[in-house]
Image 1 (tube, rainbow, N blue to C red):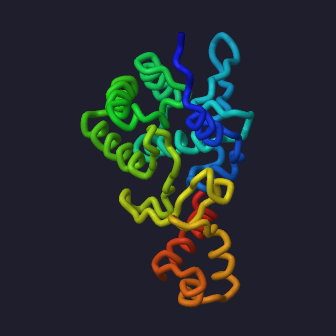
Image 2 (cartoon, helix red, strand yellow):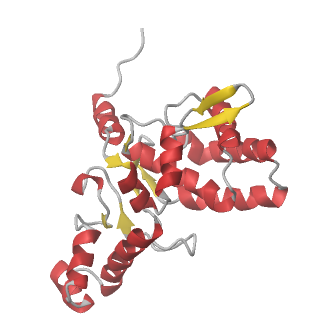
Length: 238
């Protein structure tokens, strides 16, 4: 007889797996080209000598074209590979299949085991499949680890908060903007608050100063500036 699952964990998982982000919106928050993310979640048709074939998605969404928070985390991790190498869907898919066989998971890139030894296994398998050099594998591993450090997990190992990149010019940039599915319906907010970065940026664009906004929200000017920077980045990166 299987032990009963923790009902609190089931509720948390339901929130994490609920459809919440359209492809365009998710691409905006993560700074990923919309066409790239669409390719990852929808798959693609391609021609072979035997006719047309369909490549399965790399990320399995709860609804067609709508991502969950866990999908957002998976795309964030996949972005590390895209930034380090021109992504080979075939190589990534085979590397993911290898991981799933070792540790079955619906969301292997968001799973806690990936954050421990799974990332190393993935890098080794992916590197072997697509002929990445030893130096390239080291760089990819560092890129993945930097991305994984921006995922916050609860005591059960579930990802509950993501600190998206707002610059992508440095791997260890400040974690002042957060995406939490339990706060503001999962829209970007100033970390540690429920203040949407979009609202701060709109007030700044309307002419309010950083000093005034910092006083209004009781936050430092650096935090307010990062919220504004995040929105400006989001609307120019994707």
